[in-house]
Length: 91
Image 1: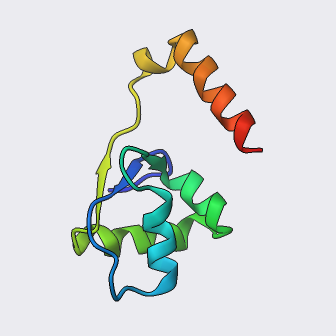
Image 2: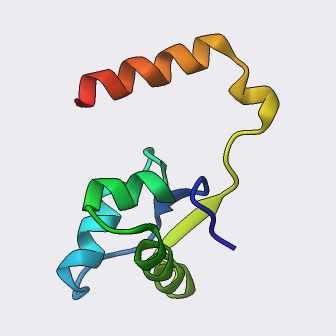
């Protein structure tokens, strides 16, 4: 099941796919992994349609998904600082 914090990475070739599908896959090309919520925000979509599209992409083998960081990993101050810095650069 995909949740808003599930991390997504593109896994397949996007030749012949609809442009919106290709745009989603381009956002999460390895080594980058983006959360479902972040993908929805970057595409300007609501969470439910994004989750449904990702479900289709998953069924077709075009994405990989993994659970988000564990609570122990999210308490890492160095990691949180790096995340904040990367997000600030994107604004």
